[in-house]
Image 1: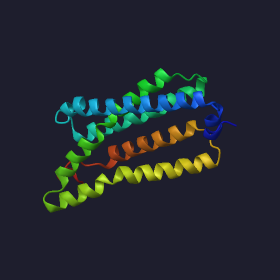
Image 2 (image 1 turned 180 degrees about the vertical axis):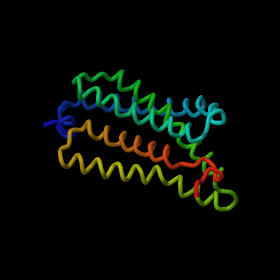
Image 3 (image 1 turned 60 degrees about the vertical axis):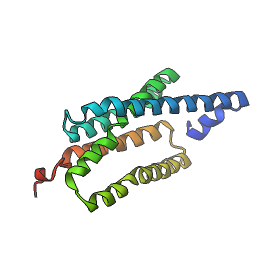
Image 4 (image 1 turned 90 degrees about the vertical axis):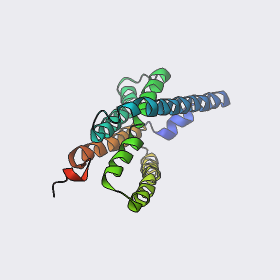
Length: 178
């Protein structure tokens, strides 16, 4: 049975633990560099395509890249740090579409004093999402669910949100059907 706890215990020596922490720091740093690069590069596309397409495209690509390296690992048993880093950099690059795209959509729907309050509440959504995902993944870990499913589940949740946005999001109030 392969669980995250078992995988964590594989590197029992201090040297392996130190190397694992270094890899995590490197991946996180490269992810953040990719995110900020995505903000700069993808920001130029913000007004060239619809905001709805912009947000859905970013969410879909980031979710697929987040899941794909773990799916590849589970199917082949082949683990390569370079592949993981590249896919996490793609994830970070396209996650950069979320904040500016949703802020553009919010600004189309709300004006004046309501906009500040609603944007403030919306800015809490990433923290709420982190709490929900962490709690869910801890439950999976407690039940010894194969750790690959942690990535597939969270990426799948992103794809589900992208589908909901595709079906129901109206970019401007003029587009509403009711």
